[in-house]
Every structure is written in C-alpha cells, then in structure tokens.
Length: 175
Image (cartoon, rainbow, N blue to C red):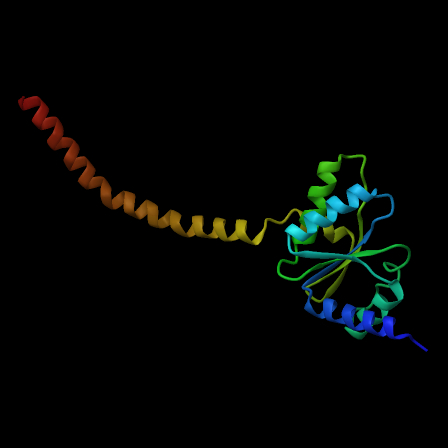
C-alpha cells in the first residue's frame, strides 16, 4: 500500500511532467556538492527546475503521460531538468556547465529526454544544445526582415545624396 508521501510526490511529479515542454534525464553521480550547487543555480537562472526524484515514481508518471521507452533511462541515480518555457534551455545550461568545468568533466551526462511530447535518446541532446536561444532567433529574424527595407531606403536616398554632392561641388568650383 503506497504511503501518503509517495502519493503526494507522484501528484507533484505528474504536474511537473504535464507542465514541462522538455524533460532531460541526467546522470549526476560524480559531481561534488559545489558543482551541484553551481549547476542548480545556473538552471535556476534559466528558469529550469532541476530535481532528483524517485525513479519508480517518475516511471509511473511518465507512463501515465504516454511516454514509453524510458525504463532504461530511469535506472540508477537520475536527476531531471524540467524546461517549461524554453525546451532547449536545459541543454544549453548543461553544455555551458560542462564547458566551464573543463573537458575532463563528463557529468551531468544526459541519459535521455522528452522533447515536445516525444521521447528521444541522448544523442539529440547535442543537437538541441547547439540551437540558438529563442531571443537570438527572433533577433536574427528581425535583422533579416529589416535588411531589404534598409537596402530600399538606401536606394531611394541615393539620388538625393548624389544631387546634394553635385550641388556642393558646383558651389565649391564657383567659389
């Protein structure tokens, strides 16, 4: 018979899974307390929740949500990073953390992920980590949209500039 604490935890896990646009399952064994705290603070800055939860409860919750194939991922110590607003934010945080800690550091290692309702293996983590952020994509789109307008404006202003240049040189030659 399940105890009340596990029932409450399962309800909380269900809610986190249903609200997340991406869930990254990571192996954190080997991280020091300082490294774990630094990683948690980076996740917090990126609006990502990073939690160590019971694998059995997580397995029940993900199956209820219709995600299959996570049994192997949920073996051994596993921490979950829930990305609610930006599904690529956890991948970028992990990538930045590993870069800061140096090449010798291999943890946290992504074991698998659920991205926009699809179960993906760990190989997709690299692809997602290299994607630009939403803000960067919007800035690039805005720049691409403004470029033709800037070119048109420049073409329309050219005759006026040329006329001013001719009149200025004519004035200088008469003086």
